[in-house]
Image (tube, rainbow, N blue to C red; front, side, top):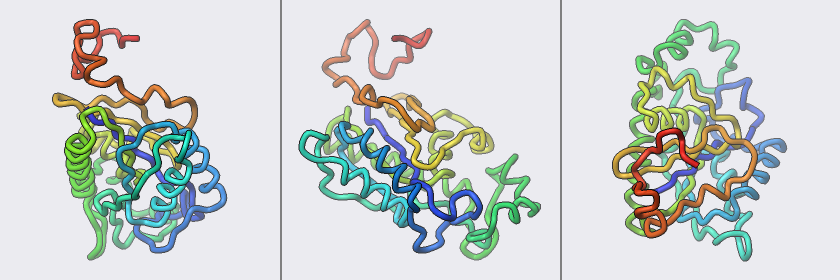
Length: 241
């Protein structure tokens, strides 16, 4: 039972008005640095088995802030930030770098909103949203197996990624068709948490931007075994305590 902490990068000058995509050298701005510093302080006590990042600068800088907040008395330090291109942003092709208000006038915009599983972004570098979801979910499965093998089934790890990628991973965890993923929100510097078991994922938090997160550390398998007669894969009717 591995627990995945999905972190969206903090704000940049392009976040909101422009579809940044894979535009190079997009860095966190002052607001974004403040956001990720606050999130890093919240995450510092959590025992992370690994810290993984999209290769894009805004995510790498977010991961670096999380790593920098750790140390003696503040959670185990992160030895290395791993990079996995599969957690990189959707490749928006010819839409990359264009203002959102301009893209909203494109015929494809309505399809992105209502039928995203049918969307392939224009241009030679354009990617389909279905392909982006597949690569990201495949990466999660690979990391789940690696983390469990190296650190045990109760380990936590964090991935710094992008809004559409996080939404696609959450949709998969919820068993939603990709066409429903626009109903999910992932704000800058938000935390989304999914706990994976042998039989199903549990979506623990979505778009969390404040509050205590100490309870995200799961009970060990030994502590939870047989407790109330329930196993780690069981969903509690009524929601539980």
